Length: 314
Image 1 (spheres, rainbow, N blue to C red):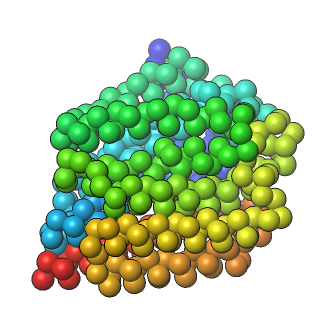
Image 2: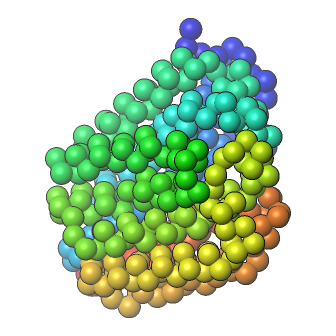
């Protein structure tokens, strides 16, 4: 039987009174929680490098706007693959999740979904992602398939390295390559530099996120950059965000972008600087809010790139 009949309530750190818990049939709620549908920031963070790359490709190609069909495909793909990634991660981490206060109420350790049901759900989400991928050119299809390597590796890294956030960056920033490849059928310096910048940005925001769990992680032996940096987190974030900003500027230069793109990057610096200034690594609720604010950062860069594409076309 695929559909779960056991709903023991929402996940501890999920959004309260979300449509998942108020409108979905009870049998579907555990799967929605497994895919984190009530927490869209995850797929936004996966989507932004795709959209940034598509916008930079529009600048380089002299188009006035990113390919709208590509933007829609990347949106659907990000939602599906983020859900698949969360499902896979929960299957791998079920024993760890059962020991951590914030995660022990997730569907698998809470008994809302069996492992076999989760595997079926994983395959279904993966098939949606594959259907999206097949809409692109052959080079982009191959590139998308290659992205499964860092996705598959990431959940295991917290057991063997203090830098699991680096491997999350490898996976979550992959879209920086995809948007460009979908337009040109090849890669260049602009998407590669954008990818490297995205990795630095991801390490930064996920370090903030990981500070929520640092005490539990220490007890169960999970490693993270939050534990590694500790009280030096703010200086580390300054270096990471500065590196991301510099690489984004180099990517814009390689795409022959104009002033509006750089203005967007500079505006993004203000937002990232605000995160560093106000951060309290011992306030878990604030860490979560600052982590989610990176969705706003994504909009800032995207707006700058799109404005520059439009100005260049006019």
